[in-house]
Image 1 (spheres, helix red, strand yellow):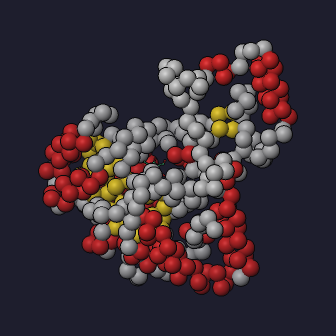
Image 2 (spheres, rainbow, N blue to C red):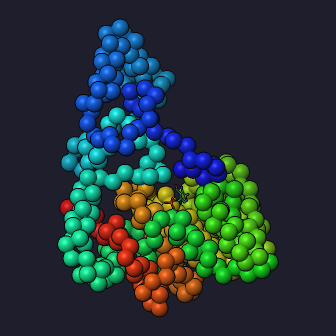
Image 3 (spheres, rainbow, N blue to C red):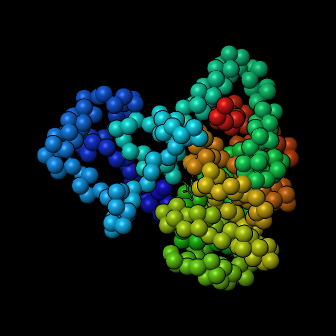
Length: 342
Ligand SMILES: Cc1ncc(COP(=O)(O)O)c(C=O)c1O
């Protein structure tokens, strides 16, 4: 997921264990030469009794020391869930947390929207903001907030950048992040602070800190009345959960705006933003909710929302939040529209 790294690692894993890099024009056809070669190698290995499986857990004897392999996921009708995606079976997609993967039914739904847009561009763009507003209404239950409490943003980075801007930093202000923050979000805080003569303070939080310890360390930082506190709901590289609800209460007590990077929450938690008392909360829909990349939500508390603007100023500019997020000029709105399974 890339936080704290200076370069994104390539986490692609070749199922056939060869060292070739993926080619952009490869499709989901398991009958490529390389796949056949891999299948032949596996078959030969099986015949020689040196199959990798000899190191696999003994599922017949659950008491054996090796951990059991997870069962493949099933769709609601009991069919293999993997069949719902168009992932190339040659490559193991182990970085869903960064890029997600979109099921085929959603790809087709989006393609229908694109065809509609290309069929009558003028009609499409005139109606787009109203359709985006309607899409918010349909998504509200999933996010766990009212439709007028959130707007769509292109990704978590955009939502966090807009929220950091809304802090209205001034000279001498301090914004707090933890050392678990996503790298790109810290960059945004640093750039915004630099531009206004403010500072970013990075508070270290032990990897195995309990919720009480997190509250104690961040409580101390909050007591100094910073201009804002940025936390993760689930951090990226360190993969730990933060006690968001308790931190929101604490931040409120100190009168400090809390910005929550909840990039990983939608699709993992039910109604993830429900009851949240953060000033701003951002969740990606392309990760565990399996929407398209370029789709995230920015939930904002009413007072904070007054200063919250999309990164693209467009015709919605004078609308109150979240209406001004519904109109982003000639952007591609199709990923925001409903892609539910029929
Ligand atoms: C915790 C966290 N925040 C923010 C992001 C940024 O997401 P995006 O690149 O979609 O803006 C990620 C991406 O993996 C993340 O893990």
